[in-house]
Image 1 (spheres, helix red, strand yellow):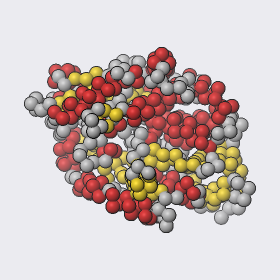
Image 2: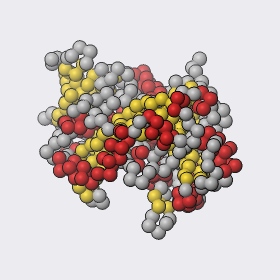
Image 3: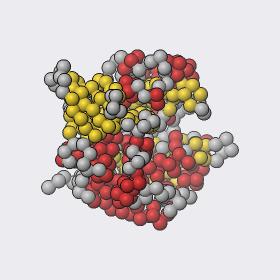
Image 4: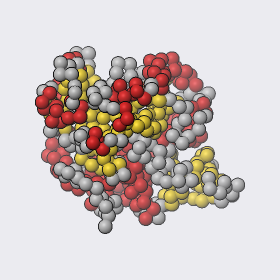
Length: 503
């Protein structure tokens, strides 16, 4: 064991999209703060942020049906869709600032324009989609959305999905061209490279094993160097825990009261990936369907065009799986180790409440490849098993906590920030919409943890995010300006974008 102790201003745990975003913000706002990053793996963005470990959807509620709920009176509640869309507008402004300031380059290496579509089958679902379209298309955030239940039009939009389809079945889709495919792995690596160029210490193969508050109010973080086996101690005024599924364990080790009575439930994902270039070439959209009755929100099936490793891919899924690991490269003891005296009742209550989820996961685990292909055939009627391979995606840990609305042991499907009362430590927990809302979530972290600085930082934040503090939905002119400028900077208006390599 090493007795080495190093002091820094900020420690970021995990080199994923969240830490990379927060580090980039802080370097722009207070360049003289010392920042240190610890990452357990050998590279940045290898867990949840990795391009093969998430769906790569720029979540803006353009196609995800679970963000618009039908109310008992038959009307559609679009409040969550508005919130998520506004958050992605903030994200795009921040990314545009980074490109315009030459902090990152070649936006097409991490973001590509791609139509976002919702597709449903059956009379009842077609009626729901029509009502959803009517509610959204009146809102300036969703301008340009189209609806069709005409098979001729749908053949133009989604030829692969419409080929050999039974024409008697009612089918409808919405389409909006302002959607995106985002390679969060590539973006994370760009941001981390930028931070490294700004003298941020990036420590790979370093696992944080403990953290505690010191008598003078700082945080002491105990870190194991996985290459040498030595243990180092680092102190900081502020610690951000952005370790994906691993964040819950570290939050518990911190001992802050805000981290008590919170549990986690790990869910893994599988995708089918197409290996036939002729099939890949015949689909160009992200097409989201409707989750089956009793299935959780994260199981919404979708057929996605993806841009990965300089080539176009086609993925279908996700199929849910279960492993007790909290990270793809985690331990089989992760779930058991997360059960503490303060959260055991919360966890048990969640187990009792979520019998349908447990049943669903067991059913998903039992599926053969051919049964998965059968589910794919609801999207591509003539799909051939030999054209598709199975890839294992990332682990997501759904937050379990006691809430007023849901009672004890409520399973949360969103992204949550848990921070200490004094703002000296914050942890990010949860799953979707995750990476797409990284910028908004990190602004929330800064508001919670650096309230004394926010007024002084406001001018710079507005330079980075012109709509900061303003509702774009209520300011259509500003929305139009933001849309035009981000589309131009990020190359989202390009009709046939190609990957641009740096000269």
